[in-house]
Amino acid sequence: MEEIVVQAEDWVKELLNEEKTGHDWHHIRRVTTIAKQIAIEENANLFVVTLASLFHDLADDKIMPSEAEGIQLIEKWLIEHQVDESTIAEISDIIKTISFSKGATLQSIEAKIVQDADRLDAIGAIGVARTFQYAGAKGHAYYDPTLSVRENMTKEEYRLGKTSAIHHFYEKLLKLKSQMHTNTAQKIAEERHQFMENFLEQFFHEWQSEFK
Ligand code: ADP
Ligand code: NI
Image 1 (spheres, rainbow, N blue to C red):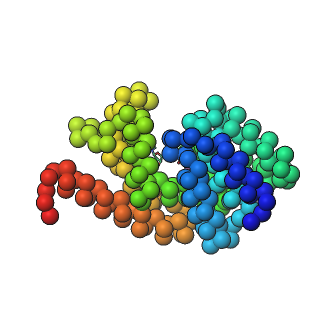
Image 2: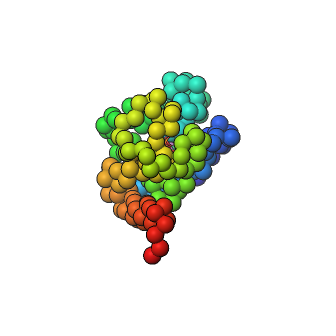
Image 3: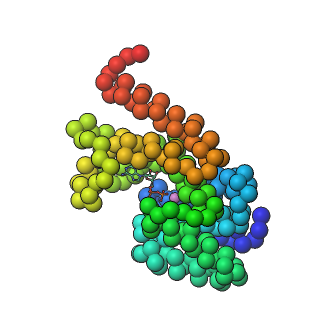
């Protein structure tokens, strides 16, 4: 492995130490590993995909004081590590579009791969675990049958906990499979999606105290 990738890993690990909002080092490690596999399958630029994956959550305002500061820090690091200007621009663009403009259409195959990998880590068994951790950290219920599924919650409703971990599956996670950009990610998503469907089915059986 290239020396700079090892240095990038060490830097991210240090910054994410103590991180408990679901953006911990292991999330980054899994996203990077799967993004690299997809990049090979899709003949994308492996170096850009690797560094963009490692840094993809650093510009999140849950981690940095602001998104702009996160991007600045990443660019400074890349300059200090002699990454050429056009590669820095590519990496920086990927992180910006993925973290700020969630609805933006991604242009490069490298950006699509990082987003696919990030989304794959939100589904399947790991996705289930992260969802409950996140809901717990926010003080939301694991399930509240009095609430309806809402696509667009206001910040206030969200703050008041008018959602639940189980609701998050319907509001977002079950939709991710059809939003994958690459065929490689689409294939991986199938199994993870099915796992969530099975989990929800079992959950509601038990919720209603039905015995199979
Ligand atoms: P990332 O930037 O890595 O995609 P997010 O900040 O969007 O992650 O979310 C981190 C984790 O928390 C993901 O697994 C996501 O599905 C989960 N999550 C996000 N919003 C909610 C929510 N309202 N309820 C439960 N889980 C959530
Ligand atoms: Ni992420």
